Image (cartoon, rainbow, N blue to C red; front, side):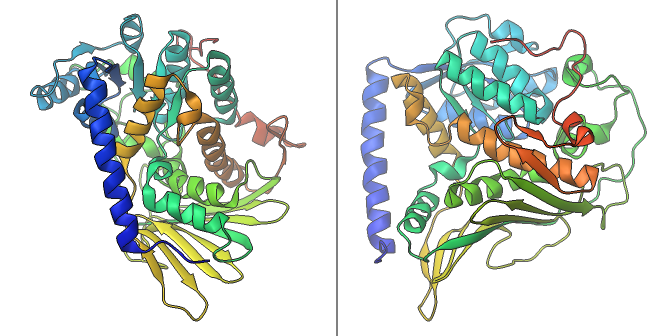
Length: 423
């Protein structure tokens, strides 16, 4: 089937962007701006602050973070665009009935607890990936969205990226024939973190709230800021941090949900430090008519199949790749066809705000119903790695069959005072 040319694709994208700018101005002129707040303003949270503050049809009114110094820095950074009210406790922020939506960019173990509290408070939610820290949280979050009917967007922004969307449509149209396998590739260089002793928390940090539902333990710099990703109590390793993007795109193209079985192997071949999570991991997700493979190497600083991170679909007519540099179609005995364009946070934010204005979750490109499934695939890869054996799933019950050890990792104990709220 003929594919869209690069020139026509760029022209169409430019026309759409121009039309959107006009529409956005009209909304702003009509006073139809969404009052938004950001909860968690670290690395990705800072990107949220910039993105939402830059949208014409959005008014960023508040931020929340347990680190006072970081709150001040972020507020100062955008002072020319917005004056925001600052909160240490997100629960106080949620009491403001004038706030219509929030985005959540906390550590992973706080994603679902904050999202559930926000939905209970009547707020639309943009939640970073992975949306859940364990399988049960994903089930509860999807059910809460369905019950409230509010918009919940997941931070898998490839779903709002035009090059990826065009690639998925080409796949649906059969450009590479029947697809029986997709490979999600996450390989890059992430340096060691070394070993650091426990210490006193920095001044201005509410460490008890940072821990939240996690067990109490002394503070360590190697379990704080970005390094929390590599500890099971707070993070999900790089399969949940970055690999979830590739898993989401692979699952999206294959058109599948939870697998019937998951096999995995992983460990530390490179790190010898305070990391708990793997630096090397291979996961196989089994479906009736296809397989989804996940490969992770955090010690490789070179390209594989044209990507540092990306997805390759294998069909009987060729391959289709979606990565940070766009979409590439490689048919047998033909020149590759390329559609430029990487992941687009701003497009995902715009899509979310449009859906919020219309109060219509069906308008979302990355709805939480899809985000939960992709997050759960990442979590299943970790569970299979940790127990060291293949998992067989009861998809309807979202549990492993005859495996109490694995099922125990499907949920967690929540510290008193930080239990999940019921929506």
